[in-house]
Image (cartoon, rainbow, N blue to C red; front, side, top):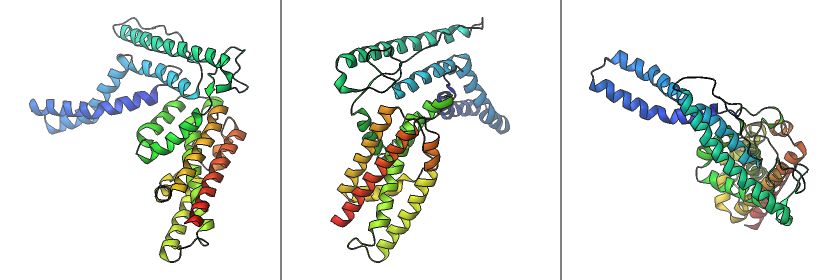
Length: 322
């Protein structure tokens, strides 16, 4: 694999190829009356060797490594750079590797030209873009300037996508790809930071508000109020100390438009802070550790605070309003 990684994407693609390949091999064994023992051996180990060999010899593993670097740069709004690849093998398998790499280089070159055009636009239309210490319209661009408001849209889309089942099918694989083979201060993920702030901290704020305001809200006596407090207490601890269990907030978001709106607002504002400051972190960690491992602890702390306070205030308002 290349220095950009590729093991995660290669594993995802290879995993998707395993079921149809096993079905094909099973049908072949059945047609030619292969014994049950040999069929199990072929399905249990032979299919993995076949798919893995194909990914390596075809050059797809190397290509996915380069593609992983492109995806990481796009997610972090950095200029796409492609290193030179020289085939060290002189065999029938070196040619497809070279061509796959050339195709990806062509795609990355097109993306880089679009990024340079965006940099030129930002230099003349600076009021629509955010400039940090890493981005200046008068210097050589290593970072692509981010349009103001794009982070807000990212946060809102993350909340909406998590409700309709896109978290495990889209967001989590992208976080895995972004973190694949990244090292040093860039080993975390900007999408992971958005996961922590736009989802985990929003849920924590809603659950905290349930514990604070539930005893004083109207109509919260009896088993319903006790069940709300028990669930919220467990979810709050899980979100703050494990960075997970965002599903606990969904019933309250669907029940109240105020809670739902405040959740989108909290996710949008916190994600805007993260994207403009290029903050990297991840969920599935205790909150203090998620802030500690970040490349911008101040920015991560600010985003977490904004998300938690806004969602908590909106939930308290909704409970006293009803």
